Length: 417
Ligand code: UTP
Image (tube, rainbow, N blue to C red; front, side, top):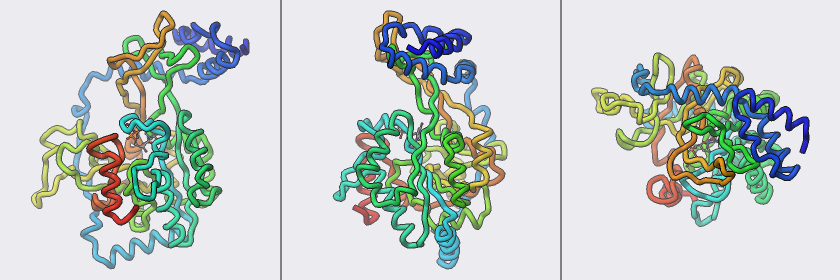
């Protein structure tokens, strides 16, 4: 065991009352011990302590802090053919001038899907057998070919799934995408703490329980990993950002890019009309005068059902994790940071007797940030409303709604296989 590292870890942990993290270090091999100590010295104890305090104080209901007004959107279906073509041609030009890049956040655990491996490696049962990564990649290939441009693709992974993700791309020859245009970068992790005591949990005797910092971690991870510097070097001006699990996502769609450029707002977001007032999704709005996404759980019934005279919901466009950011705003968001949300989870832990317990009830706080919380830092945002059947087929659950089966049917109905 590296004694210098041990002393550093002990001192750091002690000063925050977290020395239990080293309780079993004597039982570990040198290699295991160094790995644990390395984890401990890299923990931001200050932040962890602050977040636990915040979670405990978070008593007040969130809707009490809401002050929402509608954020009008622009609907593709209502545009004239000329207008669509105009926007499309702006987007196509930007692609052919290599001003567009794409970011896909793929660091999630995919807990609901329960796939053993990164979610992007999952195949939804198409005749072609394509995985989620392959489906998204094919869309980019088509776009690059049609517009004779290069679209650098940055994929965010987590420490847990990065190795398998890179291996999957290597094994599949990057699905025919130029390897030099694909960059993987790893998102941040935060310790999971005991919800009663704030003590950081050990997942095993030689491993601290850590959780990914949410998809909002993308901004900081892009800065820290050098992705923003790389984008700058390549001359990217517009950054398309999406998740990994919507098989109908229109990657860097020219009309959407053109819309973002034409609107000249800090960010353009794609939305679709909510299926019903209780659809489990956030809706676009202004909150305290700033662009925002408010979760369906935070809206009271008055807002949930509020309609315009023409019968449209005032808060009717759901967020589908599909954005175009101006490159120039990303650095600032990464530096300012995002607020943290607390998730109450069943987190396996080592108990006082040194036994790993898989709890039946929630016992741990995990802290996450969300991309859309960055909207409050923007000067402006525009929402473009697409058509659900052309835009949204998420793979969230193993069975039933938003499952591989529903996504497959929607993708095949859209003419893909
Ligand atoms: P979800 O919030 O749906 O999470 O992610 P998930 O991991 O896919 O599934 P569950 O909730 O565990 O069942 C939406 C998008 O954000 C990414 C996911 O990979 C997905 O593309 N994400 C989520 C991250 O990149 N990092 C995170 O920490 C969380």
